Length: 64
Image (tube, rainbow, N blue to C red; front, side):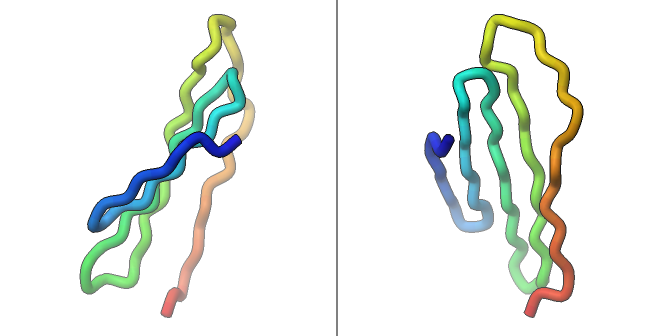
């Protein structure tokens, strides 16, 4: 579920939370370069141990 977002000059960040895990999705932009870097931080916020089997990543090429 959506929790919050913030942005600055070169970054857009979304925070999602389901009560057990928090995912912070980062999108970094670069001046004068047609590139977006995307990465996610996944944090266990529950008191129980969890395994992570899969994390999908965003990939996009040929932006105009």
